Length: 596
Image 1 (cartoon, rainbow, N blue to C red):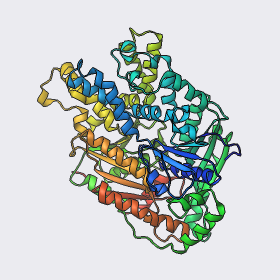
Image 2 (tube, rainbow, N blue to C red):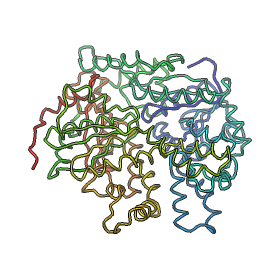
Image 3 (cartoon, rainbow, N blue to C red):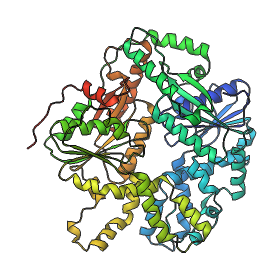
Image 4 (cartoon, helix red, strand yellow):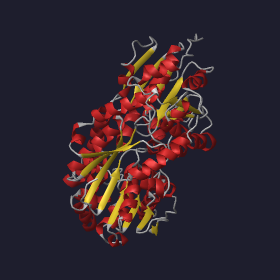
């Protein structure tokens, strides 16, 4: 990290890359140096309390064992709920219950949560709260470019009902914001000042994570927030050079680091090693930035490393379950970016096809990684068909449709607000859902595997207060008893099987759990969980660091099995560039089954 220390430090990156560990370690180091530090988390799946091993509340409190350090956890879900209440309360005398319910669901997306959280922590940057009493304020999770752009629009600060009377907004009436436009302008000005704010882009040494950091970097640079650094966490270096598996892992990490995206190569880059212990508690957090302490802890950890039991059944067992007494059905893989959804979907599709069933594999992944995986195979089963739904094209069509319907009577500022609103993640999900509704219909006669499904919020937004059903009834004129909407198909456990994918780490597990709750709210149950990149599934590990990491997975996997899922399967960590053929080869008990 740079010698010059700015007052505001933002750590941003995908779930599970180590944002919380690095932000906490940085806050502790600065506090140890005598600075008065405040650590602020706005992560919806925050494990700040677990990492610090100290009580963290929604009010500023000192952190146990660290002089000069205080922390606060802003729960974005609570902030969003309060925000929704401020939006809808004045309208309860005007609108009926169904309309209020629909408005609440419109304001339940990721954008509203981000804006509400930003509204809360903006006071720590504006100097209007206790944040002004600290030398340094460290933020675990930075606001997205979408949130900042949306609030920057002048139209966003006008009366929503006047500017956009018919539109559904993720922002809602700005009277519900506690921030004034003046405060917001002050905050943005400070975020753009390289003498005041630094943005740390946290990533792992893998393509998906680095790609996300690259996108975030560009997005922040467009907003004139250019004081950025790249922190690559969890870089593996073999301890036992006789362990072929460990050497392959090291080689893979080195290749990924050599192919860092060009825009990130221009930044200051710092790497942090993969450690044999979980970064929990003040001492281990200190070790992250203290090489001597780290060396001491590594030696003590690797000495006690031992072989782990194989905790998870493989993908072959999941395929057995999915195809038992079935010749068709819908299978969807879901999860946060970078956890292995596409690998899971591709593996399931190929394995089911190899058993003799008709399979259609489709994806809504903007990067179309499904094709990358399929290109790794020498040949594809004849009964496997593949296509992709282009989210950009579908979103463009949907955006044009909404702009023509709802933008006609808006002035220039109102149109800008509506257009920015339509850039939200929710818009893409709704647009894509319309497109893959066709794929859902095919699941009645063959197996359809969809990589990336809509969230529960999107489904509820489409269906709240029966609006989607009413629209179908109105446009088809069919007998209601004979109508089966795509949403109803997803709620049918006989037809649809939803697979939640995660990594064997605390943060991705928590994020997947939040996603599972979101789907339950939409009346959809998760069929199974898949834990990707599991070292505990690898037999014969010799490297003591890897053995320690495998042992550390045990608590996460057991929590999933005990509290979150009736069915849990695993994909082992595979240190190969061509992942799909290597995984299929390891599952050597794939045998063709004749369909009836």
